[in-house]
Image 1 (spheres, rainbow, N blue to C red):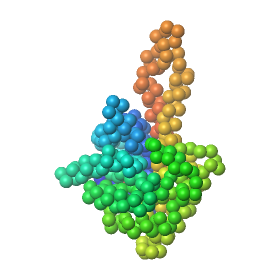
Image 2: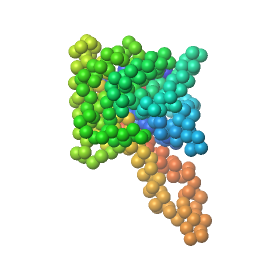
Image 3: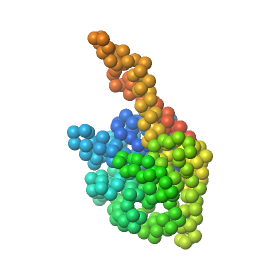
Image 4: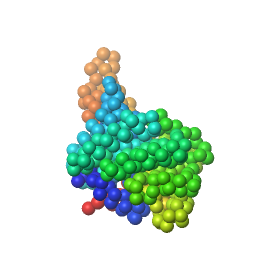
Length: 340
C-alpha cells in the first residue's frame, strides 16, 4: 500500500505531529521527478508527500492542450503503479490553487475522487490545497467551507492558506512585507469557519514570514515561534491543545534552527520545490558543459549518442534530486520514521 489510504494518511499526519517531525512535500512535474522523490524517500526510509502545482499539472498535461486535470490525473495514476515498487508510503497532493483555477483544477479533481469513493474505491488524491491568500479572509474562508465539505465527503484532506506567502508561485505573488504574518485573530476566524476537525480535517498554511524561492540572508525574517502563539490562542478559546496541523511553505533555503522551531510548534508538512528543482537541473548542466562536444554536433561532427541520450543525463538528474529529498527527510526528522 505505497499510496496512502485516507485512514493511513491521517495516521501519517498524527504520527508526525506526535513525534514532532514533518513530511517533505515534493513538487513534481514529470515521471522522472516523481521517481526522484520516491527514491529520495525510500533511501531515507521516510514516508512523504508528492504534490503537483497548477503549473506543474499544466506542464504534465502536454504543451498541445495544457490541461491541468489531465496532467494531474495521468501522473497520479502513474504514481499508483510505480510507487508499489518502493518500500515507503506516500500521499498525493495538489499544491497552490487560486480562485480563478478552482473550476479547472481542484473542483474537477474532487469530483473524480468523489466518484471513486462512491464506487467503494479510495480517492485519487489524498489532499488538495485551496490558496485563497489573494482574497479577503472572509471570502477565503467562505470558499474553504464549500471545499472542505466536498473534500470530507470524498475522504480527502483540504489544505488552506489563510494569509499570504511572499514571493511568486505559479503566477500568484505577494510582496515581502508585514502582511506575511498570520495573527491570532486570523486563526480564531479560521477555527470558527472551518471547525477543528468536526467538519473535516484540514492542514493550515499559516504565514510566519514565509517566502517562495530562495533569498539571500537578511531579506526574509521567519518567525516560526508565531505558530505556537496561533495554537495557544485558539486552544485557549476552544480547549483543544495544539489544534492546528501546520504547513511550512517557502521551505527552500530555511535554516536548521528555523525548521526545528517550526517542527516543535506543530508543522507536519514542509513544501520543497526551488531546492529540488536546482538539485535536478545542476547535474544536467554539469554534464552538458563537460560534454558539449558530445551533446552537440560541433563543426560538422556527429556528436556522441551516449552523451545526448536523455537517459544518460536524466539518471544524473534523478540522483541529484533524490539526494536533496533525502537531505530534507533528515532535516525534518522523518528519516527512519516510515510506517512499518
